[in-house]
Image 1 (cartoon, rainbow, N blue to C red):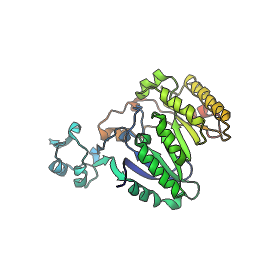
Image 2: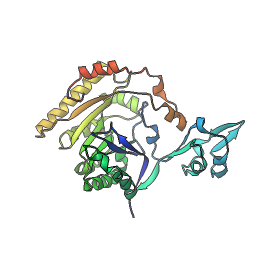
Image 3: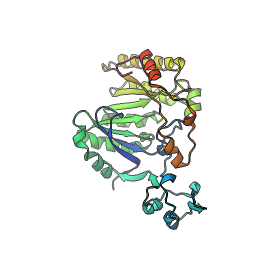
Image 4: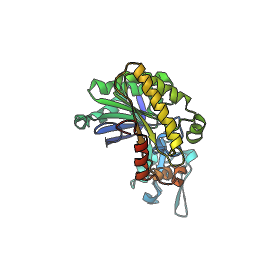
Length: 305
């Protein structure tokens, strides 16, 4: 019996999830609720129905097969009772226009690995596999086995994490992880809780522990207007990064950790709409590339910042 993971996407030819050309596996479920999240379909730990209204033909085939009465047609309008949806996906199989899809399906370790091995030729020049989400380490046992299987195939591995998991889960993947990509969003815990729904004491403690391990680490800060785009917030994060570097040096680890500032974008608005969710980040002012370049220059603590 092969273990299973709940996956909502396997994205090929990724170039922003680690070095080289990569295949990224996106896991369902996250403990944080960042209001700007780019992957809202990864937040819930259960399969979710996405409805793209602009593609709907109004044929009613979905309503005919739905066992829970999710699909309602009134005066030519297709409405959904999302509370009644069990995520069974029967309606998506009858929707030939692509208006309906399920985010999240159980996949065996063998099935995921077979998908990844199809792209092996693209990994040769420094690429590999990245586990992302959501938060992949909410499914840490499956992640650990998948990473070990990739390493056995000689594939470079990376894991993207928010860090809000018990230390034991992070520790379990380290023997099979070549690169850890970890978010640091806001240093002040009260403010962090306000914008992500969770305090950050565990995240910061895990960052300190990770700094004392030999794993290659890149900390990432998405620059969110009105949240952490000010000098005060970034200076506090820069001081924390400096502390992590000192911990690394004291542990006798020669390779340096990195800190990357990432651009905020609003490309996820359609995803929120298809999930029936409000997109609070849509009201934020855009972050200009010139402003991001200015921040990177000011806080250039490493070649990638």
